[in-house]
Length: 210
Ligand SMILES: C[S@@+](CC[C@H](N)C(=O)[O-])C[C@H]1O[C@@H](n2cnc3c(N)ncnc32)[C@H](O)[C@@H]1O
Image 1: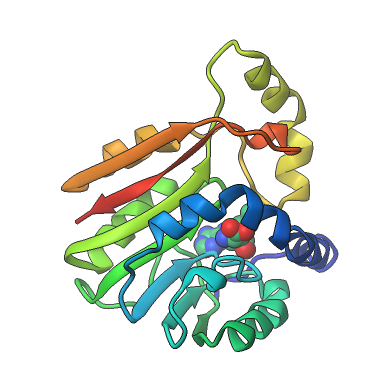
Image 2: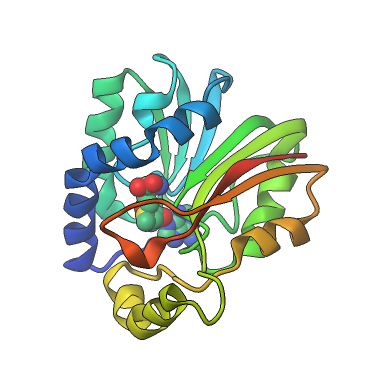
């Protein structure tokens, strides 16, 4: 079993993300509604945390949730019950998915490719598990433009951030990694937004099709 999560920081993070749910809904809600608009009845979500995305899924959705941090699980289960989501919770990492080849129509993740150990391997697993034509919908924070004030800030606080948010990297060029992963089609949007969490600007969101 591949679990993550420091007993102290893991719990603090779980409650932090729970408290931030309303804020994240205000900031990401429109993007997420567009991204998750036409998901099928069975969805795989990588790193769902405490479940801020569950409100966007159709009631009755069967969610295969790949969440290696057990400290997130209680709040995730509670959210699943509240939003009427059938939860199939699996404690593993996204780099090795215990799912057959070409078996699912949709995989989702938000703010997770910054934290997985190996983003390219994760994307290769996503491609393996998706059916031909299947969709991977994502929303991620990425490294700021080189030599910008934001890039300077990201560099300054990276060590603390990485420690506190248990492996989160502020300096990943996830758009490039998505291109390298070789999906059949990649539709990607990059944008800035006003947020109190400056270090996680800018963002990318979009869909990749196998
Ligand atoms: C920043 S939180 C984001 C949570 C949620 N997706 C959201 O949008 O708020 C990162 C999540 O990724 C999970 N995670 C970390 N490493 C992972 C891995 N290798 N595979 C899958 N999930 C992972 C963490 O446990 C955590 O729940």
